[in-house]
Length: 172
Image (tube, rainbow, N blue to C red; front, side, top):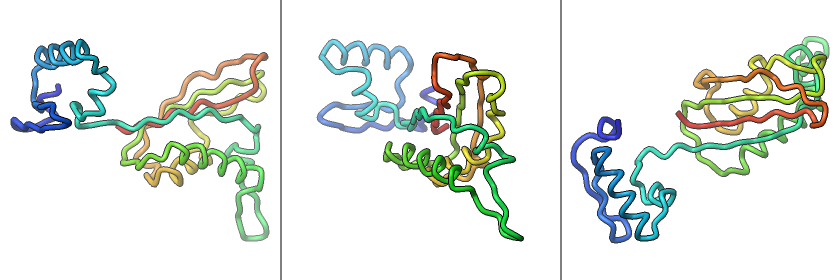
């Protein structure tokens, strides 16, 4: 798998460590074992660019404000003009702020995994149909939402927790 991702036999010198870019699985495992015995952790091996395809990942936990962010409630109309209601806009700006706090230069496509915890069955929303959530991610990452691979979990009912979403964004 690793060999398929990298074409040719390329070598680099990084911090006086020679890195061969098309190791077999056995060579890579031996190299990692050798480097961990030298005090270099596996996570820092990734930082040394042993894996040239570093995937960015962000995990955001944000409160669920209620029906205001649903498809039917977040937009208002004033005559012929359509606008995003202020409560929905505030929630959207909070989500954008939390995504931008990671300071990641996102490259598409993205996998977006959404799960939710709710107090009861009445307030459970349709997790894969939250347009404002995906619009917020699009604004924050700069990646068009047509390039999102979305996954949702079955909502959890827990009366002891405040209602919230857990949103995981990862480059594919």
